[in-house]
Length: 137
Image (cartoon, rainbow, N blue to C red; front, side):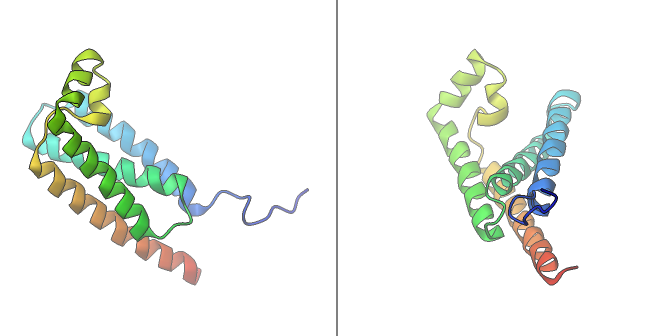
């Protein structure tokens, strides 16, 4: 039983994604709770949200190419932002405030730029790390 196959061991990417996700959630909550509501904290929160989404996607599909992970993450973030145009997330947040942390409240086109930028940076970094792992470095 000491022989564990490569497939059954958690991947480096999966472990890294889990650590990143947990770290980013704590950082995001700290930004939300401890800092004043300013444009800078809004942008930081949006970037951290994108990182959390990317890390979650990489956690659940760790063997997929970073471009696919990034595309899924960007579609999720943009979808949530566009969903805010319906007013449903705002109503949900008013009824259950923690829902605001996942769904947001009101549409802001700047958020789409922040999400796209964060996802692009993550995808590039993840691709570089994947190449390094493939080469054994």
